[in-house]
Length: 489
Image (cartoon, rainbow, N blue to C red; front, side, top):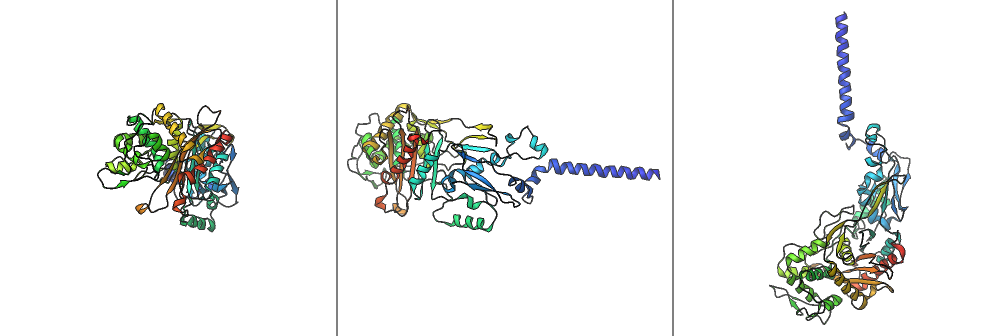
């Protein structure tokens, strides 16, 4: 009898050991896969079981959380949602996250290990920390000036601090209220369908995710390439450029919107935006130098993040001479985001140095302890300081006595370049109006802001839209907001 009891006891011990091994497997080995199994709602319940950390502008929250008392308890709320939607994105129980809500999700949701009081503390206790805070580089007054300037027209505005790369404004219009996507009710699904169905694409972040033909604003890049390559050594020397200009290897003639472009100097051609001069300059500079300069400004960079990903701006690396001529005036397949063109303007303002643009100044715990901060980082040197100084001179003259006079600010030095980009079949579409610029206050040692504006107003009459007329006043308002103190921390 005793022998049977010993066998039963040993068998029970073996079963207990098997249970312990299986429990260990489930709780330790398989815990991660089980945590992330779509059928496991505990993750979602825990995720939305506490308020989400806030995104800050000028030290004040532009987000919040609302207690609904439901299973997915806390819903995201937004202050001035349409104004800041291109910055925050949305945080939805149904549709996930986008932009800063996505890029900084671990901090905001409280799951980032840096928020734990001790290393591996949360792994042992299975606890969740309060969501941290994300302090942006955006300045409320500058963002508001850009948003009001667009006035609901389709387009985008980006403002950058040239010396650091801080993004002071990031606006896309038309916009939407991301709070409409918070929660789990039927109205959320209806809002998603409605927003995605609108032809105006309010959820498209035109500032960083849409590329446009940059038109004549790209002539800043072409001028930099020509000066760096030594194709132009004297701003006032004739360029030996015919008008019209026959594209190499074709019978197609390129013309200008203004007179006086025949053999115009670089100074005159830049001031009045002579297509023929810059098309020929691009060909004379050569494909290799043009591609290299465009790359140094940031074109063809598919890894840029701010920290949200940015659509790559394009300058083709394989072109015949006719295509190179058109690409050099911002046409053919040349395309750029508004952020990219703000980087071009900022490089001119900053002695040729292209700083990495960034949107997050620092992240902190809920109590304000700093977790991480973003420092200034140089991406590339797009041109020599001497070339940058000559381009500042050219851009200043555009505003003082050229096509960009609508951007002039009394008491400040302003440089700019207009652009009216053709697009559509046979260029039949309403042109996109561009303006890139920078501004330096009378008492400032260096330019404090660089701006890019694009307006794609499909309802405008073709003859009424231009970079100088439609986009320059918006850029001026943004620059004024910075110079008057709106860009100060």
